[in-house]
Image (cartoon, rainbow, N blue to C red):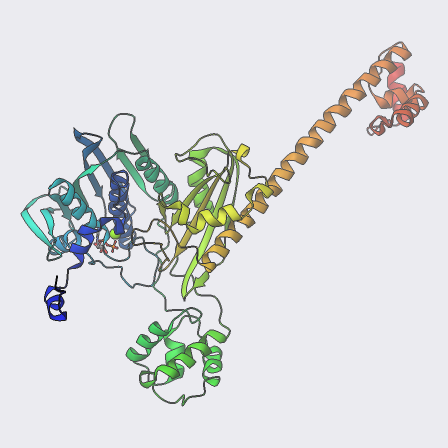
Length: 544
Ligand SMILES: Nc1ncnc2c1ncn2[C@@H]1O[C@H](COP(=O)(O)OP(=O)(O)O)[C@@H](O)[C@H]1O
Ligand SMILES: [Mg+2]
């Protein structure tokens, strides 16, 4: 057998479009099992609706409709429709959004959002057509008058939409996007859990879910009419930039002076910090930043990392806020009490993030999922207001929660507790493109663990207070009982009814009481005058 030559091999080489790669590897974007198909598809569509509504300043209302179409072994075909009241998508963009991978508006934007790469919704179209051969129907109206309808699939070898039919209809006042896809999938309780948790973490969302049968549904009214503050895009923070980013920024900056570049293009680089960084550089700092070579950039990077700067500004983040989150969770779980913690923003590689944690203690109700087998606590993970349902074993939140020592704070399996952790951040280090879990990088791990422990301390304080209150209640009851028994004895001795200790004293039983106090250590029985003098009591007794 003769081997191939380099030329033979070269003749076989070709470039493949990204769509072909994903069509062959749908697991890379979260579609590796029929159990995940529906939750992932709902996730992609609903997160887009929420992102779009929030960017447009619209209070989101989302309708999710899921129906089984036919039976085929254990797998069924389901028809999924997701509709929103968002800004809509202009007709000429619809084919790109739904039929082209890596097309979107959020890539590289330095602010918190649910979507990132522009893969999400077109991956749903792709998976649908691969498994079922069906077209996806997208309807959108941007003006409330006309709705543009596209029936499309993705042309895999071109990474572009193939439009099968397009037409217009009357929108009748509706504005937004509606997508209808057919999926081959296995039904799972995760679908409802996902929606339930989405509503809990997005209190400004009104959600209607019409599921596969009468029992499978959900209606959630928004609990606040205030949209979360729109995160503002921020500059990179000097604490975390890498060589590649610094190099690209230096090459493209409009600033001619290093000082202006540092002060102008980095978050929190105040004049003093910029001057200090420049001072510790050994190269010619009067050179324009765009002319700096590799060595110089490396040195600049070191200098920037070594100067003192405040933590990154959190304007690009949108934490849920303890109050709102607590309100969302309380209604669903009916806990004995809750404690919440919001950590100050932190950064990883110049990308700010912050962690919020809530422990709901002693819950009467449940919201799907089962308790973590290690801690015995139900752990709910959220990133940028999106619940994470899969791949928990590789996730930073689960790892930190297990290491946080929840039991020490009294958050034990018997307490029926739920732990909610929300990470709000920019460029989250997900373990994969399917965004199912966050890598346990040190910065995230530490913050999550600290948030849980801080929350745990609050919980254990509450438990202590409750126990003390209960103990003093028991002590009080015990005292009252002994007191009344003793008074009964005194009454018998006196041969008539005396009301209380003060009365007894008036009749000269003080000595007896004292003796009892001494003998039995019953301090509580020491006669109390209750504001009356002995004479008054005597008068009252004579009158009686
Ligand atoms: N329901 C929607 N309403 C308005 N715009 C949308 C909607 N869904 C998607 N888009 C637009 O389409 C783009 C691509 O969506 P997607 O492929 O999910 O990528 P990503 O969400 O990562 O940006 C989004 O960035 C957004 O601009
Ligand atoms: Mg998306």
